[in-house]
Image (cartoon, rainbow, N blue to C red; front, side, top):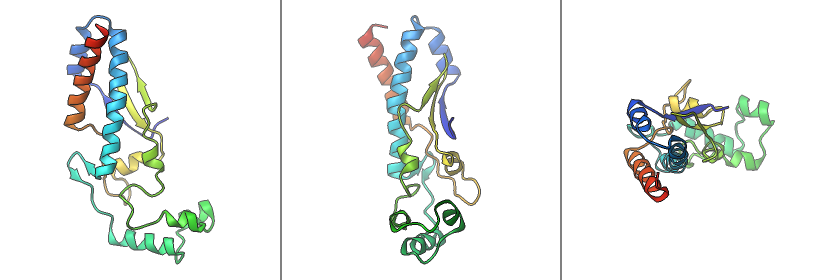
Amino acid sequence: MSDWEFKFEGSSWERFYKGLPDKDKLFKIFRSVVSVIGFKDIVDHFTKSKGPDGQWQARSASTNAAYDKIRSGQWYPNGISRRLGRPLPAARAAFNSSNKLLILTGHLRQNFLPANIRSTHDTVTLFNPVKYAGKHDRGEGNMPKRQFMWLSNLAKENIAKGIMTEMIKRKV
């Protein structure tokens, strides 16, 4: 089950797809190209801390201060205390105000895998199974919106080129 996903679908894709022969072979090509290029693009959003509308909002000064207090062992938030007890120094070390945005433990980023893909005859869905992925992408609660589940124009172009290359190579 996924917490957050990106669907590659649309009427232009459906029109294109319906007019092609050997749809099963083509869809396997489409699925594999979208998987590789789509996940690479999403991971790139983490590297660049960038959403479709520009750079992600910086971490607040109060969050940075809280991270530094947790790291130094001066403060143990309730959520951490309840789940982990008092965090060991290694767990506290993850709370570093100099960490890149959305990278605390690496769990969210590490769950972007090409295997996290579902498809039907006309839709490919890339997803991240981490419970809080959608909350970050949508900006829920007191979290700012930091979108990562989107495809750049370059990725869309590369998907189209990849599909055409594979169709020619496999004589579809």
